[in-house]
Length: 156
Image 1: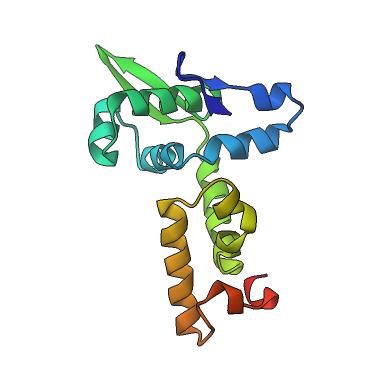
Image 2 (image 1 turned 30 degrees about the vertical axis):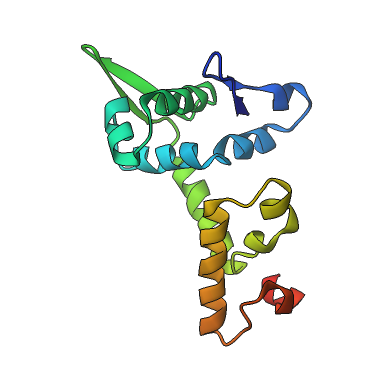
């Protein structure tokens, strides 16, 4: 799912192209901004103004990502006067994200070392931060921090 910059909505081209609904779900959650919004909404409902202030994002950015999450039926809102309060529609989404964190911890964050993750799509600040965290973890375990010296067993 991608954000259509004109409409600000999720475009379900992935599903139309034959991608499974599970792949589309994970693709919709692959955006760091949408993940941050979901994590914030897990603590309780919020208005766009609350999200912009807490996440340090522009109103238009938050609105576009909320529209995407609404299109995926992961988020909805309730109106109260002129205000809209957004919340998660599927609390079990947090179980899925917790399972993902558990899996990342169990694999030693090996996804950071995946050649496709950081290089094909360009290294990001998040990638660099995860790599630094992995390097620190490896140093604490007495393993080499240099990715070239890490054996396949160490990252599998």
